[in-house]
Image (cartoon, rainbow, N blue to C red; front, side, top):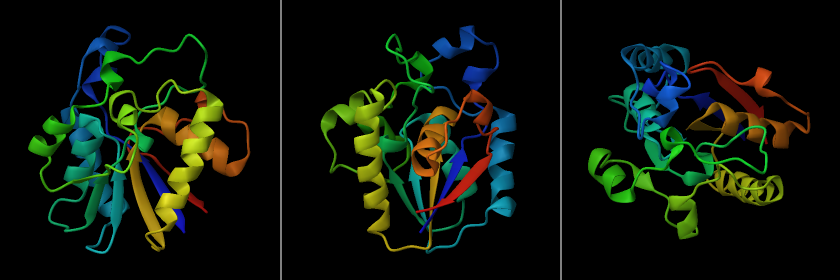
Length: 191
């Protein structure tokens, strides 16, 4: 199985750093929406594809624009939500990285499935500031979960720190923030 991690398009929270990190539930910018549209040509989808999506507005919007007119399966899962990288003890979740309320997701993205077979605290706290050992346990479970779909490829729309955390776990290589993907950048790895 191939996992294709894709970072969301440019979000409003990146426009006036560090102040814009305080924006709750930031959307894509016009440039971010255009980046998501370009994914249609860079990574074309079919109706048979599966996309796992972080429960954050900018990732949900990226997936929505990218998959427009494609009836593929879209699953919202907090195991690809934002993650601080590298993790440190004093980490806090920034307002821009707080998980959206489930009712808002259901209302704003009604065709998306929501993965509910997870502890409820993942839907409120996510994986953002979990210890490395806690993250590794959940990450391994998530990879097993993906394998159950028996697909050649599964797409994951996520965040720079989350993608880098999974890359580090799956590759066994020590990574840094220099390894972060750019907006709508992708990383593919076989599992």
